[in-house]
Image (cartoon, rainbow, N blue to C red; front, side, top):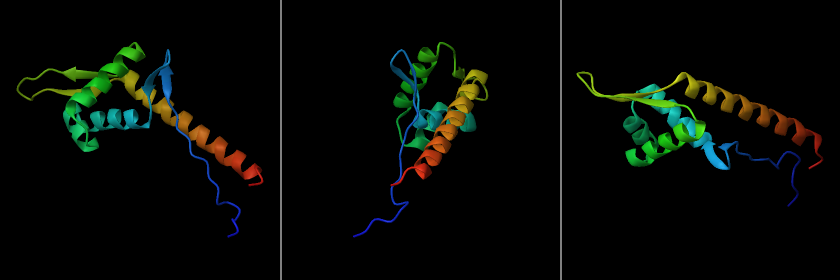
Length: 116
């Protein structure tokens, strides 16, 4: 079977690390975006098919490793509790997405130049 030009693709993943510890990747970005959208860690976890405990642990790790709050919890009251992504969190999401896009563009350009 003869392979056609363009059959080969490149897959990649972008991760942000702090001191060799994973800070942010595609899944964590999705979690942050869902927290921001739903106003709840619990609802974000449910939407991703993970436990609240796992989601909360990821949020705590991101907050600690970033050295600043990316997600803040709101304490309950009449309207109940919840959570929201801070401005720092939104900036980190935007930076991640911008870098991921640039890497994808670079790879696509380089792949065109290869004779494979």
